[in-house]
Length: 454
Image 1 (tube, rainbow, N blue to C red):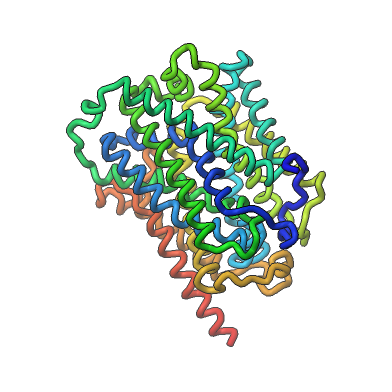
Image 2 (cartoon, rainbow, N blue to C red; image 1 turned 45 degrees about the horizontal axis):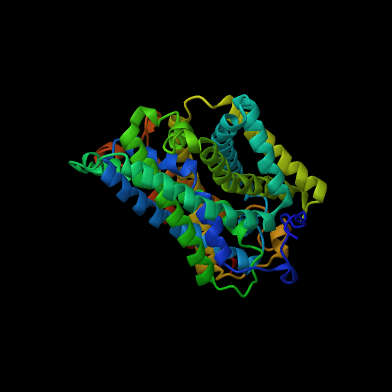
């Protein structure tokens, strides 16, 4: 039954418990992307100074590029049957994997907090509860669904996906029909550095799914092909994000300050007074899928980090529930305390994540597809004295250098500008280096390490 509590946590899923078809990944990730935070991310492309027409081009390009490593991570789930970050122990060592894990936990908390804030705003308008109380209620509901687990998350993803199509189709028609798009798209000047920044922002949206996308595919039968898992995931995540982000870019281009800081109110206002409550409910439910995924992945990341030092390969049901509740409480507190200046803070949050998560993604994918060719010793992933060891210097060195190589090219507006970024007109291409350099270094270090042992 879908409502039965999930038994598995960070331990491998045996073949006898594998089930489903990869097409469920399409609806899950389509629903995870067609929601209000995606629209806010799309608005950022215009906020940073890109012409609306080129902003939509940047949305397509960023999601198409960022979706590739994201979907490649998804294809790891059926092959190994373990959470994504447990598999990172093969590259970084059982203890060493805690280094990127800390940053991934920050990512989960940030996205969960932002999701609870936006979802809570919708709940507050529906119920007339104080906003802080509504945020807490929304976070609690997300935690409850995460506790029930994998099956219900996928079932809800299908329902939310169907709802998202109806809602966004209606809202898109209302947005387009009520305004002169010829005026909005007039004089499409291309500011290339800002265009690259917009591509980076949208690519980062997809790249930050990497640390937990395999968590949603690990129950599929091991015979599921890499190609099927990749394309069903890629199609859902890219199509959903491009639609929602393009909507957000247009909304900001049309409304400006009326959208910034009042995202939920503006969106539901497109439907008029008669549809106010249905649209608020749709926004709250639409945001719910990805909010649950964030808390679901967050607890497994915390568990992966802590159990690595405790030599545990599984969690009791009570411990699993405790981890989920802990992540939910912390995320809700962050949402309540940080709900002012949400949009500008969200830009900085995406930039921060991009610098630290792309090197991890590069190393993980190179190891899985090129070096070990999908073959791992699952028992050793839970044993600090096993073949993967406690600390794996090739991955740790490549990871640190992968972060360092991005610094000269980084451009975090108002915070830090690397020395090379101004020479490129302010364009931020650091994430491309973060994807290419660490993987290449890891391959070189691993070959040298093998040669030395020989």
